[in-house]
Amino acid sequence: MKWCYKVWIFLVAIFCGSIIMGSSALATLPGFDPSQMSDMSDFDPATPIIPSGDTIKIGLVEAFSGPSAAMGHMVAINVYWAVHDLNKRGGIFVDGKMKKIQVILGNSMGKPAMTKKAAERLILKDKVDILWGTSGSHTSKIMSQVAKKYKTIYMNPMSLADSLHDGNNFSRYTFRTTVNTTMVGKALAYFYAKRPETKFYILNQDYGFGHAIADAFKKGLKTFKPGAEIVGEVYHPLFSKDFAPYITQVKSSGAEVIFTGDWDPDASNLIRQARRMGVGLPFANIYADDVMTLKALGPQGGVGQVNANDYMISVDTPTNKVWLKAWNDQWKRGWGEPYDTIRYKWPRGVISRLVESTYWLLDVVSRAGSTDPEKIIKVWEGDKWVGFTGTLEMRACDHQVVRDIYISEFIFPNKWFKDAASYGKPVIMPRNIAVSPTPKDLKRCRQ
Image 1 (cartoon, rainbow, N blue to C red):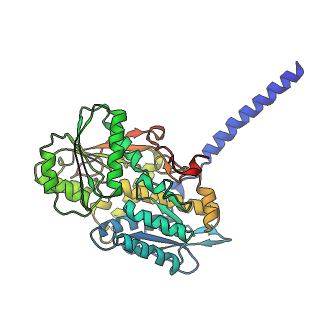
Image 2 (image 1 turned 90 degrees about the horizontal axis):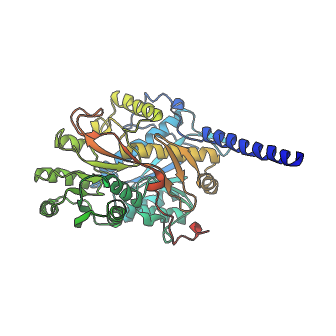
């Protein structure tokens, strides 16, 4: 009996200790700590402060000229913010010393050939430690290939095609900090599951991402709303200027919702032309939330738009409140062009996602204590990190982030903009529902 009693006491001690250790681990999970943010009053993204010398070098590849140049400016501010904050804290302790972070730009012009040229120049000439970017899954694929060739860490917080991390394209050096097409498609279908709309029209850009996100949405509808009907499915060239032929087809389709994965400038041009042609249908989207476009439509013109994203300004968490105020307070001080418009008044969807991703990346580098790719990989695989609205987890086998997704119907009036529709209360699609399966053709995911 004494032996049994001692065993029982021992097992209870182990069980209780596990609970305490688990709680302690959760409490000390790394993440964004708003109380540690530096004084950002001297931050102006139009004139970033770029250190030189012995620095940690980030090569930011994006379109800074051409039809999607506005995307480059929108992306750059987010990297500049996180880097400015950390540099004011003294930088990051790596390789036995404190180092500041330097951002070096590479202009992809939105073209695959230029993307490859820019990424290779950053690695071979500028000696960057990390590649960061870029808009378009077709160009992100090239970035990943270049990173793999030169064994350089590449963070992709921008491009969603599932295929970027499948058996053919996976690279140990590439980490995706944004959701993929399966997760977005499932999330939007999940949102419509209990709503009355049943007829959907798909209108997307004609390249890998456009087709992939459409397929994900169709599969999601089969799961969550099997009675739904796809009344039309059309794909248009990137950077189209005339959407009239497509909108005419939508008008005669009987659709109740237009599903689009378009990003700017296509997303804004599509919505503006649709409204001018008398099509007032809501767009279910991920990138069609530009406030300049919503303002141009008039306060009621954007009501009913449905946006899905991995970050949303209307998510009510203490950390997010502090983050939003910090950003908005600095914007009010008056940034230079092009950051002086209401487009940057609040760090909406993509903006906060990119700032958050950059903080995560640099926190991983800090915990690795090195810019050595192998040491960074070791820390980042399986890492859990608390961001602005919740926990991000880097799935170890395919380097895909796992997180909640937020869906919101735009309303007016709202607390964000006085003359444009914007985010209402978000619907949360939990990560256990949103998560995409691991790639079946990726051997390391089957081990």
